[in-house]
Structures are given as structure tokens and as C-alpha cells.
Image 1 (tube, rainbow, N blue to C red):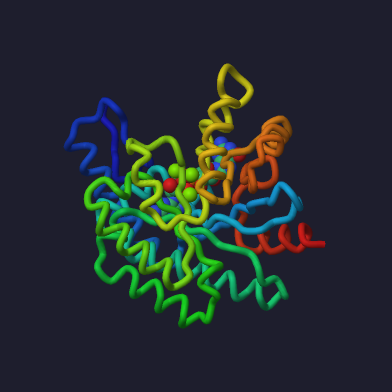
Image 2: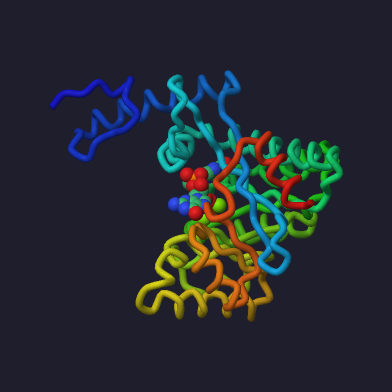
Length: 278
Ligand code: C2E
Ligand code: MG
Ligand code: MG
Ligand code: MG
């Protein structure tokens, strides 16, 4: 069946390679145009401390709205941004937005909320990455300890020593590093004590499996690994009270998920946080 891909949001499994490439090129052009036109948004999903039940931080998540008001999923457009190289500029902008948000919260008298941003391997390959990052944080006059980079295990795939060097430089500047989607990567555990981590995020898939079979045992094991490495532990994708209850029992520090809040546009996030801190 014939399809017009330049106007379509998704590629199909049975498409030819040519069709897929045309689709991807069209998407990349649209993404570039929309980014230049400042149509991308950074939303924020609250992270709640299980001890105090207060918001202690948030994760910045990119949103790409279409003309009809729907959002194209980052799982679709981030790989396109990575392939086209656009992720470098977008990633710089994400960090600026995070700094801007921290300043705006400060203006409301809210000073201790961390903001985590996701970073792609392509950004680490950019030799100016750490310099730009430190410069941005300084120029916004933001406390670097409030900025956290979320990396995944896959970032270590090609040149782990180079990445570890960059992370150590950033850590020396006070910037925090979290390991995202922990447990889903390819890697062995040997890299764990080579990374200057402060937090570990347990992947949503483990949290979702907690009420069945050995699911709880697996989460418990991941948590105790994190705890023994003296990392703060964050559970992602917490959707039910039962999951939150289990995670509390198992000593998880922080949770993030639809149970508390979906990712919110900046204005709604500020309202949410003001409510939470009352
Ligand atoms: P991630 O970093 O693992 O982000 C967590 C994802 O889980 C987000 O999906 C979030 O909306 C979703 N989520 C949070 N709580 C729940 C829940 O309770 N239930 C369910 N079902 N989902 C939940 P999102 O926003 O679609 O982002 C997907 C991925 O795209 C992110 O996964 C991250 O890898 C990537 N991404 C998003 N923003 C950026 C960015 O600024 N830069 C880069 N490089 N990647 C980004
Ligand atoms: Mg993340
Ligand atoms: Mg994750
Ligand atoms: Mg992910």
C-alpha cells in the first residue's frame, strides 16, 4: 500500500528502506524548522521524596507539538535528532531551559529543586560539550549541584574512558550525574564504580513488574545495589499506590511517575510545586 511519508508521523514496518529514509529526512527537516521557530518545549515531571512526600526535583522532558495539538513522542524524534546532528543544538537549548527554570523557581523563593536533563551520546562526542555546559550554568548563575545529567548505560558503548573523563570533569564542577533506565542496558556491572554517579534510576519496566512473580525481588536487589554504592535511588514510572508502598518498604528514596504527576508544562509545574511545598 502506498503512503505519503513526508506528511505522515510514523514509518511502517513493511516500508522499503527508501520510504523510511524519505520519511526520516522529512521529519528531520520539520524538526529543524520547528526548533528554529521555538516550537519545542521542555516539560517537567516532579520527583517526590518518599520520606517527606515533598517534591525534591524533576526531570526535563522534551515535547514536540504538532499543528493539531498532539505531541510527537521523544522516542520517535530523539533518534531523528541524533541522526541528523540536530541533537547538539537541541541539547544545548534543553540545558538553557533547565537553568532558566531554576532561576524562575528561585524568583518564587523555591531554591532546592534539582532539574535532571537527558543527554545523548552524540552530545558527549561533541568536544565542546563540557565547556559549553559549564559556561551555560555559570552565565545563568545557577548552582551546578541543582543540574543533573541523566545518562544511560549505552553511552559507554564506544569510548567509555573518554566519557568517564568528561563526567569526572563535570562532577568536579559540581554537576550531578544519574544513571537512567538502570538494568535495561547491555553492560556489565564493572563500569558502575568507574562512573561519578550520585543517583540511580530504576527503569519503569521493573517497577511495573513488581506485583508479579519475582518482580519485587528484582527491584529489591537493584535498590540494595544502589544503596551499597551510596547512590540515591529513584524509581521511574510509578503508577499505583501499591508500587509506592512496596518502594517505601524497600527503602527507595525518590519516586517519579503518573501516580504523582505526568510531565507538566512549566506553568503547571510551578503550580504543582508551590502546592507540594505548602
Ligand atoms: P526517560 O529519560 O527514561 O524518561 C522517562 C519516560 O517515562 C518519559 O517518557 C516519561 O514521560 C515516562 N513516564 C514517566 N512516568 C511514567 C508513568 O508513570 N507511566 C508511564 N507509562 N510512563 C511514564 P517521554 O517523555 O515520552 O520520553 C521518552 C524518552 O525520550 C526519555 O526516556 C528519554 O530517553 C528521551 N528524552 C526525552 N527528553 C529528552 C531530551 O531532552 N534529550 C534527550 N537526549 N532525550 C530525551
Ligand atoms: Mg531520563
Ligand atoms: Mg528512564
Ligand atoms: Mg528511556
